[in-house]
Image (tube, rainbow, N blue to C red; front, top):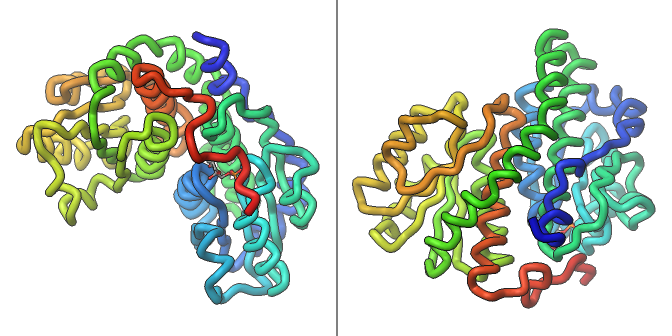
Length: 346
Ligand code: F1P
């Protein structure tokens, strides 16, 4: 791998400090509601966290764009816990949204990368992802770090509340322990992603589809492609396809499915059939050894089998690599995409 790629996608990203979570477990366990606020990639991590927290902790979760939350008139107050997610810890929209929720009595918990950043200072408590600075502007390994922290939080809160069994907790801890190796193996197979990237580098549009935990991964894949390769890309829950985006499908549209084996597997297989029936080109990120989808898709990228709750930690990697290699194939500066700033402070 090039230095640049290595710097962006370190398997070690996400070495955590969870003391802030441990110290505030009762605030989380007693929360009436959790509201997650963030922007961009961090917002996508928040969407994954919504699935994790509602599944493991049975606490209602809302995920809000900070850039909307700050301007609207949200009903927020004592008993609400805000989780603010930000790689830079300096994003202006997220900072202002936090201040607004804080004034109204909510408890603010920051999940940020940078120690001493503005968001960490104005939060009541928090957890650092310690993913290290991103070499490029677009957020990649920070996403891995955020998902790891958020998974650990959901597991610990679920254990504290008694909404998961000790056996489930232990199972997830074991699964989490295997993630670094799986990340490493997925990155090691990057040349397969390059092959796919070279084939689709001239595409004008892209559709990314996923269900369940892989739905936010589809959104994130589309965002990364826009940011790094300047290709118009849309991300949708696969089941939403029939409510509009299916009109776009023809032989020129590559459709990337994040289709690892989970509770939605059979449904996503029929979504793939629907795209093929309309002559769309299907690229599928699948669990190793999935011969069914292999027989249907134009191109497949395999990733190691992972518990569905933690699957995004692995399934997002080929989408990041794809954007990277398409950007390189188009001769773009993947580290400094036009018009993007590392932290959006205005
Ligand atoms: C949020 C964000 C990033 C994106 C770009 C602009 O930043 O939207 O996700 O890749 O760098 O800012 P942050 O609040 O997570 O630092």
